[in-house]
Length: 311
Image (cartoon, rainbow, N blue to C red; front, top):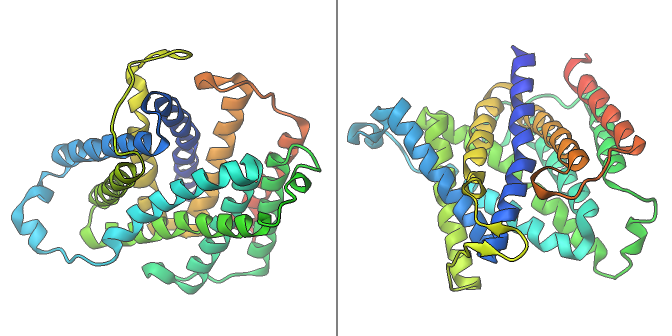
């Protein structure tokens, strides 16, 4: 059972790099990352509506909604998703891709451990052992090894604000674990992971729409791009991939906890990223897998074994 859940987490995590690549391609035609993300969230919302109508039509009844109580979990998940997206957009041009990945994933690990250890957001507490701490340290080391291409990459960032941006990255990285925990609690409260995901996507869509309206004040999509040609239908499927990720996270968090769920999805993201980079999929420039990245992946996999199976 545990192996099946971890495998499901790997698959859910693997869709994220593909979703990011697809949304990036869409942003070339919207000329706005916020607008592309708004479309992605909106498509996800529509997909969830179709799923609910098909699989759980009783959710549409008035009697069902009369039994629900609206609380903070209805809003936190969607806002955290938007916060993480916005944070990455702010960090990337300031400190580069490697430090952005390292700082945000470190924030995810730290917050995930805190949530699991203290039982925040209605999550059943799990003891924080020395073995678990060792595994998380190895996990972090493997992530750093995979994302730093040169030893002096970090040293190039010499401006005085570097530390502040790294701290901001840690804070932005805290968003996904909070989103996972609150969405899982929401799923249990409404007795439906699909409805919980729909609420989260709806809040995210409204939030991103407001951000786009404030920042750009226009909603236009070009049909033809000088470099990438005509707009393709599959540029709009990022939201459907997001549905798979968010819904899976809601289900897994209730069974294996926030930390284990995040570890599985992070490894899925890393594996998918390696495949996309190595083969140059979805128009991404090819970046062959180096011995350093392979070593980092081995360390990460070893860390997961320690976290999950050591006494």
